Length: 287
Ligand code: PDD
Image (tube, rainbow, N blue to C red; front, side, top):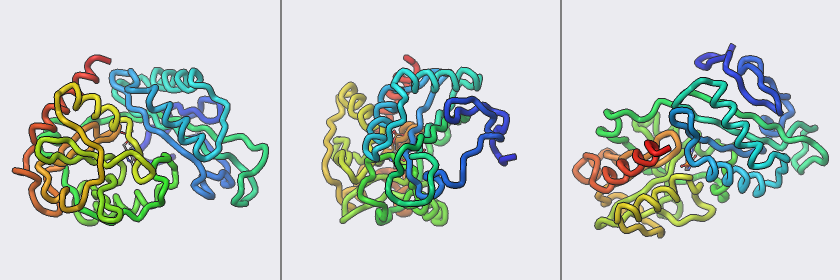
């Protein structure tokens, strides 16, 4: 029995549906041995997947980036995700998809002729509630000590795990990471800054994971008439920002209202957040 999960829920493992409590992979799986795999997290609302195309396209990019061919087509992935959501009976939920290079004798180079391990599970999704949206998140700045290919949604998440733990130990919700003096992202989220009414984000590239909400926020900003610019953002600019926002599949879009122990702006969710939040909710409502 695995604590704190629904052991009876059905998960997809290598083409079969099995109970989570019974799902097993080999100790020689390269995901376990090397962290050699990629993943994605697709949120769903009322049983309907949100931006599934974009999530699956990113999964395919991550797989291609590390040279895993798992033979599943886009239609196969869509069916797996939709069937799992349906079987779960859940409304708001998140689908976790993971593909590792597979099982082989331990040796760093890619083994020939092995099958990737494909695993998908659905978990209940507790959306950020009104109190959290109103209160916002707290964060501290921290050096980005991860590798240099953060654009790949790798399951090797030790850097992200240590970053989140640093936040927990500091009594805040998350870290805002910096590399060479410039903003990268949170431990598992993209970070946005508002300066003089302009929404800023670090440029796409290898130093951040391009969230599915990255493109979405760009779209919503355009729709709301909020100017948007992707460019390097310094630590000083984050410190003096009028608003800081955080986005991810599970946090949706939230304001960061305290940074390094100080209020951000007036310490309350700002006007840019409020407009983008409403636009985000409208996209969910239209699903
Ligand atoms: N994380 N950056 C990092 C490092 C992330 O791990 C995530 C998401 C994001 C935001 O991506 P998206 O908007 O597509 O969720 C940015 C997921 C939710 C996770 O690891 O659970």
